[in-house]
Length: 182
Image (tube, rainbow, N blue to C red; front, side, top):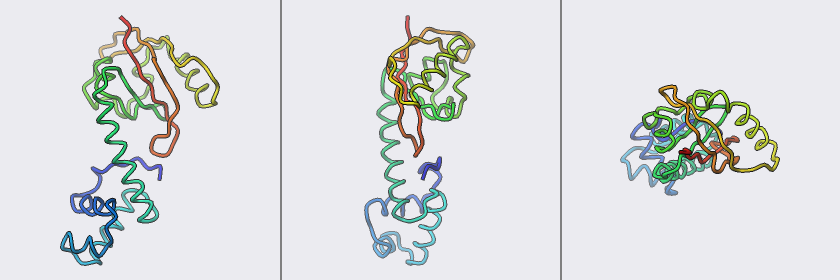
């Protein structure tokens, strides 16, 4: 269930049926609610399984709930005044508005961007070493200073105020709170 997907990949009918599955409705109840035969509902559920990468309806429901909770959390984090980012496989998976603004990017523009594009070359080794230690479970200071690289090529001083290892979409990732130093 570590697939990279979201609710937007479901068409409107699939989304409607997925919502009812998450609410615990049976196939019969869903059929009545959406005015489709049970066979059509089952076909739709199969498409949901394919799109989520789940092997069973139960695991699809768990994935749907997890994705919904993640999106809710992201909406809250997006309002934070400090920069917050999630990196996985050396790529930005999520960055809040403050993180985008700090680097001079528009909201959403950093998703999928390699981390080396937003960290100044002089800080690459430090960030890589901290990430390596974090993955190994070695204790080290949670806060450290770095230089970030902005969209316009400018470098700025920043601090990683807090960073930690999390599971994101079923795999290890790093979440970091970054503040600009002035």
